[in-house]
Image (tube, rainbow, N blue to C red):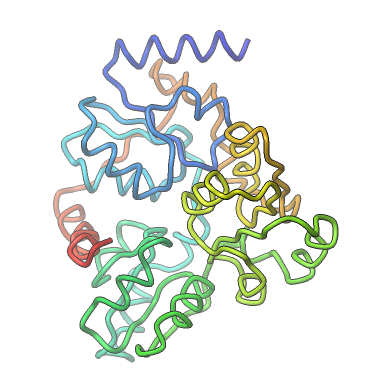
Length: 304
């Protein structure tokens, strides 16, 4: 049944000139029919260079917005309209505008996991893999880092020469993990290396053998000569790595490390989108695109 649906998707996307993007947190059956799988910003870059006129994002809303910002001439569809991102949606432009008035000499550094509207007020955008490099590179001494306090704390610790103002925001999925979860996992798997995403709490991150983005975690695990790993990010990565590296063992840090917004998208959603019975087209006016893409252009300028 799954193979039949996948075959139908592959046939339709070729007929309709569609590029399918799947974030790494998607299930394996969706990743198998995608043209590209990876982190959010990397996917939007792939969409920009792909020849197809239509793009389906299997991820969450801010990711589809980023694709549209970088490829305004393309039709961009979000496979499941209910797939939002609590972190991206927890701060709005008006709130940050008021904070900027309080800290006028601070550069606003926005994590890629933000809405297009919020990006319009940012000076530069960052990804989890480029945040440290870009915060070091920008000329401003003072940085207002939004929205993730945990990623911001990690960057702050790596860039002590800058002054950081952090707000109380972040990824609820990663933030729910506690130090005790790590100690329990290490106790159960004493030979395993612990690989963690910097969206986790500082007391969790400090116990890691490797800290990095989702793509960084997967790359580290694939290239390492070690055989056992505890994965401190969304649990779908455990499954993907089990497929990629059948000779190695991968363990979830916690059974609760699940992003329900990501899991909202199913293989049938992708099929319905291709058949015109589902999905949502991302509509953004030219002014919003022009204003929101500036911080991404700055990120590229600083080597992100």
